[in-house]
Structures are given as structure tokens and as C-alpha cells.
Amino acid sequence: MTSTPVDIEHQSPVSASAPAPARRRVKRRTVQTTIWFVGLIILTAIVLYPLLWLFLSTLKPNSEFGSNAGLIPVNPTVENYGKVMEGIAGVPMWKFFLNSFILAASAVVGTVTSSALAAYAFARVQFKGLGILFAAMIGTLLLPFHVVIIPQYIIFNQLGWIDTFIPLILPKFLATEAFFVFLIVQFIRQMPRDMDEAARIDGAGHMRIFWSIILPLIRPALITCAIFAFIWTWNDFLSPLLYLTSPENYPLPIALRLYNDASSGGADYGATVTASFLALVPILLFFIVFQRFLVDGVATQGLKG
Image (cartoon, one colour):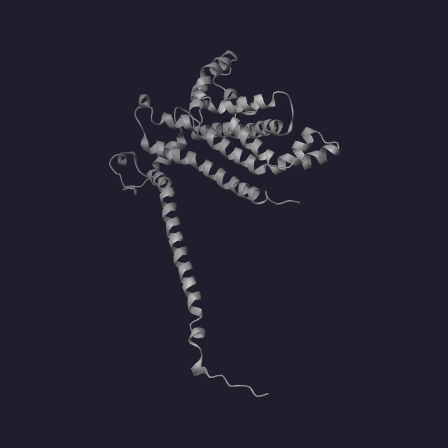
């Protein structure tokens, strides 16, 4: 059988130009990727600009506030950090940090624990008045916090708990945050009841089902509640202002007000900005650490064994 030689000079022009569409697709993808990359850089710069401004402002001397509107300090200094570390009103700065940490950590533990238990009861336990109580709980979301300020203050004052952390910590252990309860309830209701029924056949009660089955599966919701509870409590200004009167019990938001108190000799903008930046660091660290667990929990939520 004789093979026919291939005439290279008379090849079809279609085969010679075949890679052209592929090159155009690659070029189009490269342009789209570049546009997305530039857009994300611009968006990131816009989001991070306030944080960058806050950090660079901590290096400005107090005399430049009001005269230097630029981003870069003319005469950078670290004097503001020294003044902040010394504290104010006779209280060192670490004491304010400790008070805020105690309140925020207690809020996380109390909110997550009580909200999870209440949510399990609403989602899995059948009892009389379930619908009415759940509707009443949701209705508290429409009730402004300012409406209950005076009754709560009167109760805590009669109990002698003013100027202590108890009024700020105790409600967190009583499932008073309806938003978190509702969030976890909706998360539990999406889970099939087959696992509960199988565990109940094996003799498990509600606490065993909650601890061994429900709790591991609602980890993404619990971490979400922990993140929000920590941030909201760390930044809370009104509640500590109502119940705390001694400077040694003040958390960071109240301590920041002292730097701008006119009765104490005027506003120290450099110290205020520096204290604000230092107060922001724990929140960033907390969110970065727990965001990893949140993403892992969401990623494994759809897996079935």
C-alpha cells in the first residue's frame, strides 16, 4: 500500500488559522481578569482608606489636627501612644481594655449559650403556646431599646447592681437577643428530623440530642452570633454609660469620651485617635480568627454522611 505524500504548500487555509479563535478567547479572558483585578484594587483602597487615615493620624502631633488636612503627618511622632498607655482619670489604658474584654467575652458566652438553647426549644420542642411565645419573641425586635431603659434601670438600682458589670452581663445569659434566637431557629429548622428521631429511639433525650447532634451542625450560626455579639458589645456606648459610674469600671467606648471631655482641659485629638485605633485592633483580630471557622463551617454544611 503506497502512502500519498502531503503537500505542505497546498494545505487548507482553515487549518492554518484554527488557533486564532483560541488566542482571542485567551486574550478576552486576560482583559476581563485585568479589569476585575483593577476594580477590586480600587474597591479595596476605598474600603481601607479610613483605616489607613486613622493609623497615620496616630502619628500626628496634637497641633496638626485642624491645620494639616493631608494624609501624611508633617512631623510624625509616637508621643500619642505614650499618652494613651498612661491612661486617663487615674486609670491605665490596660484596665479599660480588660473591662471591655470581660464584657465582650461574657456577652459571647452568654448570648451563644442562651440563644442556642432557646432556639432549640422553639425549633424542636412541642409545647402549648409555642406559636404565641415565638411571635412575642419576634415582636421584641420591633421594640426600641430606649423603651425599656427606665424600667431596667429601676430594677437594677433596687437590686444594688448599679456600677457593676451584672446589668451588662446577666441579660446576655437570658436569651434577650431575639435576632440571634431567630437566626439559630431558622438554621435548625432546615435540618431533617430523621437524626432526632433515630437518637430518640436509642433513648436520647432533648439535652443529648441538642449536645451531640444539633450543636455540631449549627456551628456556622453560633460563630456568626459570636462575631456579632463580640463586636456589638465591644462598641457599645449607651449601656455602660447608664450603669457604670466609676472610671475604673469603664470600658473603652466610655474611656474614649474622657479624652474629649471639655471639663478635663479640652480635647486631645491625638490621644483620641490613637486610643480609637488601639480599640479597633482586637475587633479586627477577633473577626480574622473566627472568619476562618465560619468559612469552614459553611463549606462543610452541605456534606452528608
